Length: 330
Image (tube, rainbow, N blue to C red):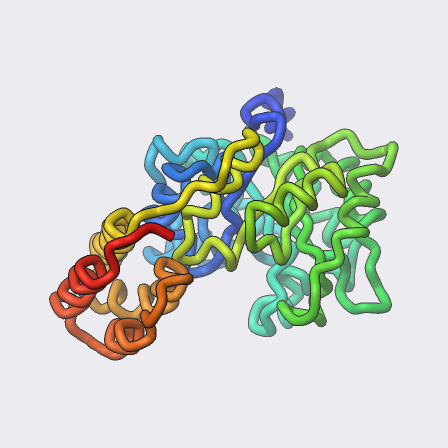
């Protein structure tokens, strides 16, 4: 049994802006871009503890990160004690700053096996598994979870207390239940209850529906959280972190010229190519273009070409044409 003498709180700013972990989104290249634009906290993509324990190359590769990304947590998920503990130990060997356990993923293939938010049907097991991970590693442990499993079962205040009691040093809460998936609106009132619970001593991060700097500031002030994670709104829009920093510092929101947007988009594309090859980059970038060029008038014809071509060279040509045809900032 290890007793961690490190504190997550010591390596975080007073208020943290983080990039929420997302499968096939928070790859190293995109994390580094978000860091450049102001993200304080980064997480790896979530990694199956079973796959990590078996040494599956694609899963092990997800632990890779650059020193510029710190502070960074490797996020793991699972439901089996032995593999979850082993995966946490392997994650520590990557040199990450802490280990994050995903108790929040709502997708059927994960939650249906009792992993992710599926564990919220068995809080006793959630507590036991989390405790075992905390006891087994020399670095801090955090968890990311949801309000509960269903609309009539939202035990997040109790869950947060129990996570803290077994040694978790940071809890991130998405303001939906497992059954909601990503539908409806995130309910931040319960996140606020966790933060304002007199028993809570650890940092509490909120997550869900933060799609602008203005909303980030509003929710920070209203609910008093120690940090906010931005997920889908950051896809193809790393600039949101810069705008969040602007509003926190009382500045006017930055605008970004098309040249900068295209340059960052190309950087992302090239990073994905280096990560997993041309084909992967072509396919995975398709979900990012709308974000990079949101607000650009008459962008649709260019977007259609970008998401239908299978030529890496043609994508670069189209992006260069976008830069030429739209010479302004937004």
